[in-house]
Image (cartoon, rainbow, N blue to C red):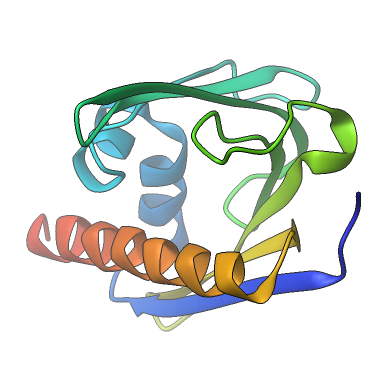
Length: 144
């Protein structure tokens, strides 16, 4: 069942949008800031996107489809998490959007997650996204 609950987190990263974009679409970099996740995709509209890994001793394989790609500006995919306890059917997929805006070589990355089942999951989701963003910021800023 679709929900109107949306989570949103944002962070400024002191690098150009091209560097943030590279980190969002390069599996070797994703693994470094995204809880050790192995990301698999062709990174084009309509292609599958899969996130595999292990969390607290439990294997997972989350999946979705890439919906929109505007290089260095926007990346959107739908997403179903295997550990969510929610049935794998279209209405249960969240839409995840990475929106980038750059000014003076500082990129603000905003992650928007739509179709969150309830407020408790929204809070949990935003906490996880904040950890991901902090890890991404630390990774990119230390490589300067």
